[in-house]
Image 1 (cartoon, each protein chain N blue to C red):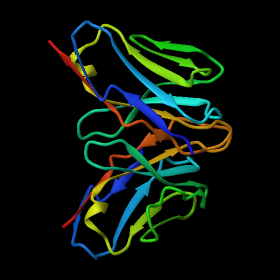
Image 2 (cartoon, chains in turn purple, green):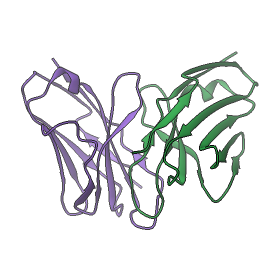
Image 3 (cartoon, rainbow over the protein chains, first blue to last red):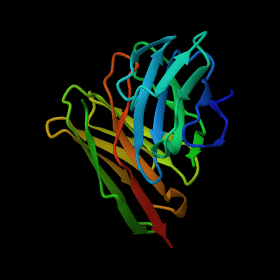
Image 4 (cartoon, rainbow over the protein chains, first blue to last red):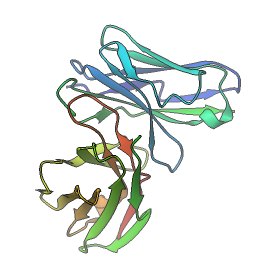
Length: 115
Length: 113
């Protein structure tokens, strides 16, 4: 079946502009996660959703970052007033939900470059 | 919160040799420990995981060991091959709910001919 997809694959934006990153999880996966990976570094947790609710937003770096999920499906990560330090690959993952943990399946990521 | 440390950061082995990567975690409540492999420019993919009710798990050339008392776990790759070259990440989380993974900083494994 189809895996996790993300769009766009690459995004170049000017400092100060807002960006939206999209994640389409595997159908039926109720849990959805966002991570950030700076160049040559590990994965940094941002937020996760169980259904449309976000029980853990502890990794969001600032109030410029927000995320939502609708229909227990698509999720959007929004970064307002982008800064150069926001440049990174943003990875989305999904998994089965309650009773886990279950394997997290990652999308290909969105490479964000802030100029 | 959980903190996961991983070492070494880089590892070079000759084809056919074994590779060992070690991780330690801080939260004694963590009880799920997956390992992900990430090839250059690709997404991370799960290669093996272990839950705290077992001390060792093996899948062909890959094995993971867990010492809950010492709060450390290790990845062992035997008979390494060039296609094993990648960055490997360990992670830790809690069971019983969908919850975030806390990742180590990664080990770049290079298998040379």
